[in-house]
Length: 357
Image 1 (cartoon, helix red, strand yellow):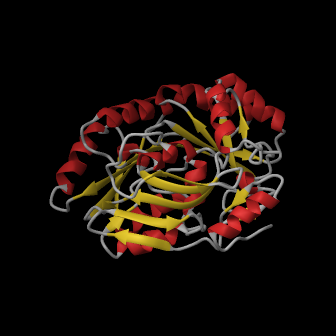
Image 2: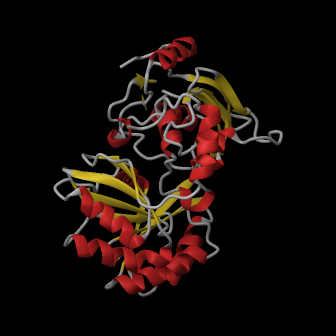
């Protein structure tokens, strides 16, 4: 594996490599299997303006390092990046398009990326976006590369906007007796005007709700949320207990060994259908529904055949992305926008170096 230490070395690596697959820290093993180039030495924060709420960092910079620097100034990455404690890098997070439970309120990683510098398949250095919140109109390259899995180019440098961290956090754990009232409560909370930071459903019938904001206003907000879920058994968590709940969620500590981690986009209205489909394949598949029930994180046993996984995608008419584990294919299921994607690849990767094996 080639490990360039500069953008010039990265260009040389792309030129000399027949098929380019990039790895950051390797936290998403299914995405970086058989990688040919590593960005781990392209690391470091290049520019940070706390008063402007923006920073620029190299793609191989660990998310945890960025979070530490931001925390010193009372700021944070609002899209709540997963696997930061495991070592995930900024470039890998953008390339996979991953956001955590905090995406529920403000949006995902693509909503906060301002600028990007990358090396294309023919080793050109391309810039997109800028380093300020308001940019001129044009082709939005930062949005195109987010979630593109490295198909548009090798990310080198990224600029993000950040936000002030809340004064205090409170997590509400709500336990119901059945799935149906749990989903009903999730729908009530999702449309409530309470500015919830996170709203997750842990099967079979538990909701996790997170509130963040001014300390003086927090008790009244918590009480209003409790009234919306009066039919549940409720426990309040603060401080380290609150932080641990969402750290466990972002790091997928609920995922057993010998399981692949799968991301499936759904809608909250599909929750009963998805639960029924999963139970038809296995007695109990570990799963968590995040972002108000719009993302299903599924633990798929490595012992189950990949044909079963394909059958699940077909039954639900959904594409999935496999992040970790032994399943070999990265994407399964129906996908839209392929003609447009191909036209983009003709521009950014004319030699087809980024085609996944």
